[in-house]
Amino acid sequence: MDDILLLEAIENYLSGKMSAEERAYFENLRKTTPEIDQMVVEHGMFLQQMDTYAAHRNLKHHLHEAHIKLIETGEITENPSQTTKAKVIQLWRKYKRVATIAASVGGVIALVISVVVVAVSPAPNNRAVTELSRKVDNLQKKTDALNTEVRKSKIPESITQTNNGSSFLIDTRGFILTNAHVVQGLSNVVVVNSRGEEFKARIISVDGSKDLALLKIDDEDFQSPSSLPYNFKRTASDLAEEIYTLGYPRNTIVYNQGYMSALTGFNGDTLSYQLSVTANPGNSGGPVLNKNGEIIGVLSGRQEQAEGVVFAVRTKAIHRFIDQVKKADTSLEKIKLPTASSLKGKDRPQQIKQLQEYVYQVKAF
Amino acid sequence: MKAEYNEQLLLKGLANNDSKAIETIYKENFQVILSLIINNNGSSDDARDVFQEAMIALYEKAQSQSFVLTCRIQTYLYSVCRRLWLKRLQQNGRYLYDSDSVSETVAVEEDLEEHERKNAEFAIMDRALSSLGEPCKSLLEAYYLQKKDMQEIAKEFRYTNADNAKNQKYKCLMRLKKLFFAQFNIGE
Image (cartoon, rainbow over all chains, first blue to last red; front, side, top):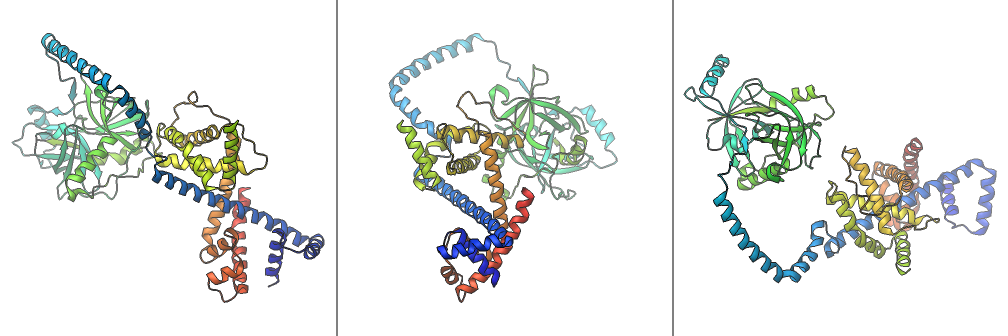
């Protein structure tokens, strides 16, 4: 009980609530008892800490409220592009007439030019980008058959030609992602993992414009892994960032490394990247990862005339594609892209060891 | 001259926790910071965090007696946010596009060091308070932060009398002090 009284006295003393008489008595007590003096100093410091803490917390609260209020009243926005809107509208009003005239003149000129160009220019080579899928011919199929003869192949023997590519697991329940051009127009798909085990899969959705396709492994031999070691990078990547790919240009998994050489893809496509890495037909649909083991894209094609110019579909497009798929079919709403990478900080061979069993070869026929 | 006077008033308001002043500073400066962060790989949430952090740093500065404003509020906030964001980007292994040439900045390193020290103290107190548990936490907050008197607290927490509440408060305070100083002295 004495302690409590002492503390109360100290608090009263520090906050100046004591009468002059009490104060004089207490100050005398401080002088004569060093323990009390020390307690006063210590408690004073502690109370000051409490006060700063209170002020700090109060301010945080105020700031938070101000933010919400200003957003509600529209005095600030969280979208910077909206702030320039007013200016654009103003300019538009001012120059509306000039713009209409200019546009019509421009339209006529454009028409004339395009007619001339079409008439004069030679037929364009519209296959500037080769799709890296690979038609394996009869002969190669036979050698494959020899290799896998021991295990009975899930591809019917009558099939002599398959369209091959790479793919990787994006959900532990067997959803895999690949390029649209690997499976487009075909209905039967078999995927093969790095150990050579084959699984039947079906095509869930194909988006030709993004060059992405979602497949699902539909095979009783397939065992869902408990988790995936990689995740999808949310933010954009930097120029010159080191990247690597895994894929199946042959029937064996092949690793390649390179770097990010441009932040846009073919003809300035903002949904893809340009990479500098070796890629061959069959690499299509394979994952592109950064040094932390985060997926930054899906390898999609290369430029025909140029050496080492490879394109990859950005994760932004992947997220959009998956959202679109989920919207179209409610039974797929549960698809969840992996969010945590366990590869960060590990050296490359270690990363690949963990990764490779989730990268599959796709054979479509 | 008038603008300068206005800014002094705003800072005084901020130091006194005046919500009008806070809103005015917020309104006039948030958009600039938002575009700085968005243009450098950040999101609007990042912008809010960084901006509010800078506001707290400004508040701390405005509170000290010796404080004189040597530049515009916007320049100061911009410099602090730029520095804070740069640091956060570096932690993630990314870099800021150099935008020094676009906006004027002032040196804020010392202020930020001070701010970080205060932040650490804040975190220690916060941790100590939240590890106290109820009803100690609410009791101490009512007395020391909201400055309610013991009678009121006794009523609110349903103690039979103020002395019992005082007794409980004393026990809680001793625990809090122990928790706080254990951390605080390591920090020193």
